[in-house]
Image (cartoon, rainbow, N blue to C red; front, side, top):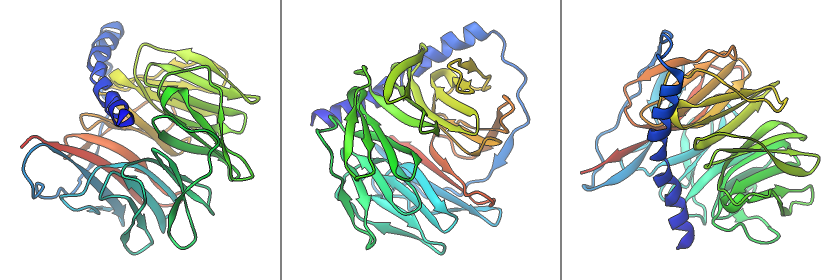
Length: 335
């Protein structure tokens, strides 16, 4: 399908991050001294039972100060995490992952009509998952397609909402869908044809989306405009309090206070960063390829987290008021 070709086009485009990294490191000159690293010891599974090239998913859940592996060796990649509480956490992904839910005692699986899911978000009473379509979870655990005016060509990559009754989904060709109080999802004009990979913000009038071609779009007073652009692949945006972060290729981390100005923060890595998420303004995580995993207290300094996992981190989530932490990773095998 054309949408599958486009989907894997993003994966191929990630290779441009290597060139962007070299350019960025040249501009910066000698790297700053590395901050003392944290260390996470992550239990690793056996190799997949099948041979040949394949990509597998890894899900780690820290409770009581120790990480446990929550996936099997043959599970498919996990792409996104969201939680309502320490006892209600959602993980979505490809094929046999579907939706995994932590209910306070175990991770259990719910099936969906979708073959591949790339985003999940909820508001305490409703939970939505995104892929080629957007699905809403019913009270009895079924996932049903939501009503959409028009069609999101190629699918939706990510979801986020500034308040319980409003949710945004972003995707291919500058697509933005907005869920209204009536429950119908309506498209909004962005003036962009670029693939939007993430959406996030600080509130109803402070919402950003980022593209794989380096654009940062902002929604204000019902209008989307391009606020900033960089020579990089942008992977994610997240905000809390008065702080907004965008991450991308070459270890790029940008920060803004919502004033329209974006300042680069030294990440200490040249790896492709594909995600950023925080428990709040003083506990933020950035992560991506080549086992890149960083954390910041919101002071502009980023501290590396060393692990025994050598490939890509896909998502991080942690409940407020708890030391619990959930991390999703992806591992590629060549034989």
